[in-house]
Length: 279
Image 1 (cartoon, rainbow, N blue to C red):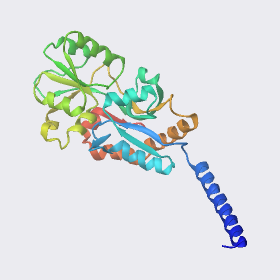
Image 2: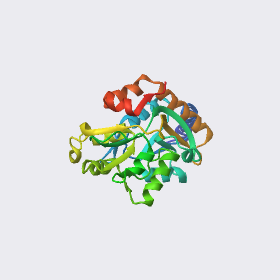
Image 3: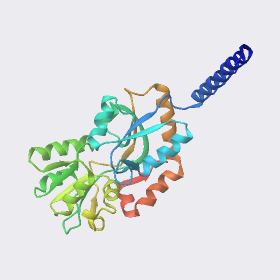
Image 4: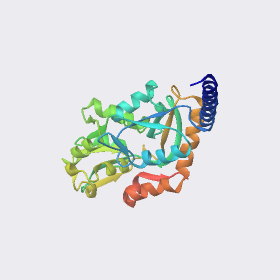
């Protein structure tokens, strides 16, 4: 290669480098999020489905769709429920979803409401009178509560758990299906959680076949309708990323596809006991 050709090649390399740098700058300027958003994915019925490390379900599917529109990169990390909460609290996760709003979680992040939700007492159908409040649970000494470690439905829920723990009437499991198996084993077992979470987790699960048709949902006075949604991390997220994610999540909740996804997965009886659209 002669000197003239070498100079032309160097010139073209500089031009090409400048063009690539310009495109990279434009792409960065148009991207909504400054980096990949890390989301712990813990199995939660049809809301979050984890199978062989593959994450799907209502929230992951919609999050991927709306993140793509917003030009945000997201990554799911499969973990148990309790681990998801500890990661979020320690600043190793950017988004906690789905999550029921509680005072404790409000101290760890910014809450973005997506849907109205409530937890109920869930038992096998029986001839007993419906339980309407937590005081009745405490008096029903034959009833043993089985709950998922890491689930939280507020101050009254935590107070009840502590009271039952003192008398040995509560046990903890790592996932919803384990809770369902214990409920199926006898009428003296019960749980407190969102009906859609339990119902979604046991669909197609051979170990609890037939359980869904035999469940009773009892609303409790101390657990009224509240809000479920997502928490944006205070420790790990920059302000502009929080702004972008808040906007993305709000658009997702307002989309007709959001409530339609719930209606697709759950029969009216379960939805009526558990969830209502926010918008």
